[in-house]
Amino acid sequence: MTNENNIMLAIVLKENGKVIGGTTIENINKKDGTAGGGIWLNESYQKNGYGIEAFCIRAKFCFEILNLRRLENGYFKENEKSRNMQYKLGYKDEGIRRKRYLCLATNDYVDECITGLLKEEFVDINK
Image 1 (cartoon, one colour):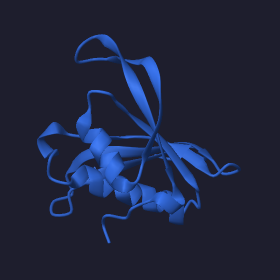
Image 2: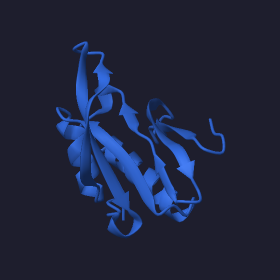
Image 3: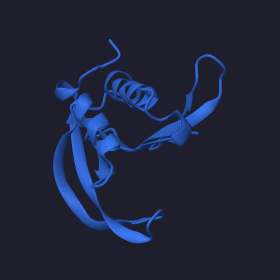
Image 4: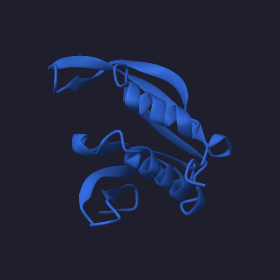
């Protein structure tokens, strides 16, 4: 699904076409060259490299096709998998939004660590 400011993409297994997750490109701002977004992956398919492969392709698409210069994302403080995935692609920590989101697993409000990735800092791990 797409509109001029948001794109939603499925993460699909190459061997059988099964949808195992998704990624978004949100709040696309062509004037400033920025966008945000996120990723989710079915827990059964985590720890196989699918998430980082998809997020890397997403970043490459943003920089090469959409001609953006900066991506803005984040992770929950407790989510080391998301943090490590973003770091491998070159994302840098930029701040914390305190008690930003309600965590459905714990029913507590949790901090969101804000990250940013500049085009010149992007590490294409799929090369």
